[in-house]
Image 1 (tube, rainbow, N blue to C red):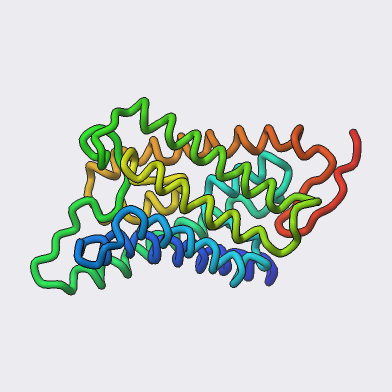
Image 2 (image 1 turned 45 degrees about the horizontal axis):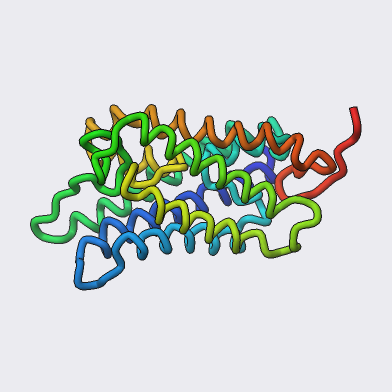
Length: 245
């Protein structure tokens, strides 16, 4: 692995670690105490802030994906190099699992603590609002589709330079405000996998949906971007002119 790819995958590891630890940590640690008053809105804000902060901290190194669905969606749009796809996804998965392990270690330090759902995603009986499979599938596809459209649009030529992290972070807040009651919000297979491994086998058994739906939504958005933003393509954080076929 070359030096540049090592730096990129390290950035993806740290970014995904922070997203999983910060967002799921708010749900597991802070939202567990109603007197703190953060509720769904606080958890949604926590997820948005993790992406916003790491987009500026390491986004200039790797492009700031922090999510396998984002990597695959950007790849589908011609905005992520082939050679980066697998290393990025592996780094994201490792970051999410390590973050979930650290969160579990901290949370279990409280006497009598039980993991319950451990901020995992689910449908049916494991959905916070007991929403069925079809509703959860549609929610995750739509939420990830629009997340990718916002990411691609705000990083495209002609968008305000240097400000992409702000709409992307706030988009993730809005996504969580809408979909926490439905699926507990995934839109990120790595985030879902990390905590599910510590939540129990019933959550692991439902992980397929939280890989399939976000990736489908992201890749549909990526394919649409070839038409919508046909004048340019972005490889990581560098905008270059797309040559006509």
